[in-house]
Image (cartoon, rainbow, N blue to C red; front, side):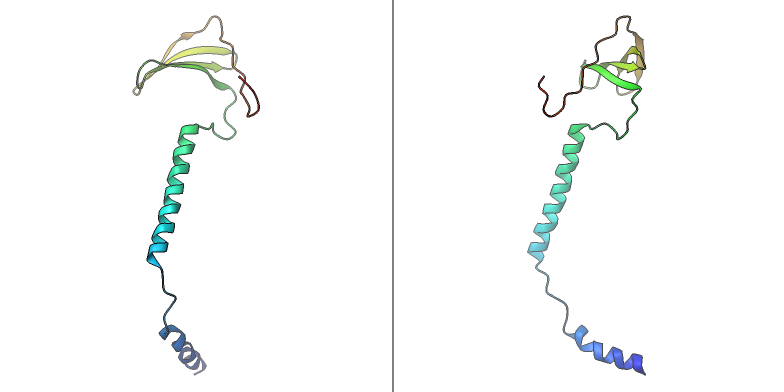
Length: 113
């Protein structure tokens, strides 16, 4: 009986209806949030940040674009450097460098080139 009484007392609150939603404000806010997420995704894709705690044994020393999707890459593996040819379908080992290239130091925010 008490439950029925509590339900009857709460009924007028449901009958009054909830707050009105301003749909134009909601749509604008949603579009802004979605646009911000897309912009941040594009920014992260362009920055090409290395994976957190990446493998320190492999390092790309130099890269040369040969075409739209083809490139030559010098990769340092331990103390050796190898030349790789990369296409969308294949990665080919082209050889080991007899005279290793100098590994450029990473530039920080305050460093000058």
